[in-house]
Image (cartoon, rainbow, N blue to C red; front, side):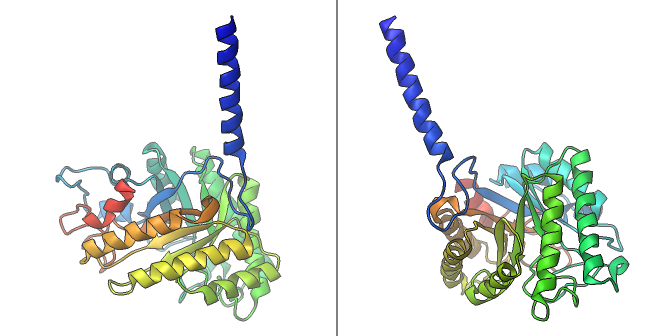
Length: 345
């Protein structure tokens, strides 16, 4: 009996220590807690169904054909990012296509990020075109459209057993979205209202989903301060700050250092964690890209109190596809050494 008592007391002591560690919060500057923290190593492979329909196949390093989602998992990914457009003319990246890919990601045991472009086509720093069916709407009507579209997409995903872990409300919104009404440089309040429409729509579907506001040029601290100071001043809400980072073979080391400095400033200034939502480099320089990714993964993971949430490669599976040159597969459809840091990190 004495032995059982001592063993019980020891077990309770260990439980108390583990519970205290698991529920500890971040220090000054806020951000995430250590509870359930899993560093995201991911890829945006939104083109995959269109590539497959065009006859493309994907292979492991031994030349064995594999499903692209399973291949991503086997090379170290634990998350998939997928874009969604409102009413694309060719159907790719519409809600049905998104759901089909999200189901495959879930079946591969991977977390899902949904990237709302709020357009019928690409939204990025140079293009934030309103969907054709929303053209001419007032800011109030646009907020309703953002709300309804966001809810409809996420509800359709949930009806198919998918609850995303993260949702981007807008893609690379350096100067706002849904131009001209939501252009940040001319009306930051409108941009903030659209962000809140998306944020509130996501939370109305599931409060556990984390909402990302995503900006390109993760090395540019002035840009990030301008955007997020403006959003904060206009009472916008977000859970995570998202960044893109696309250096070339000569600038990656300095970009990574500047990006880390920017991440630390964002965490301190706004009390929010940071995710690198897009990275890429010239497919013809896989060894340099390997060094870039290894260094970036290490830097993001080093951010204090688990406020560096992860890194996603943008469309690594592309090879000989629509002239895109920043993928990470060779011309035979196999991943290059560029992606090896995801497996070994």
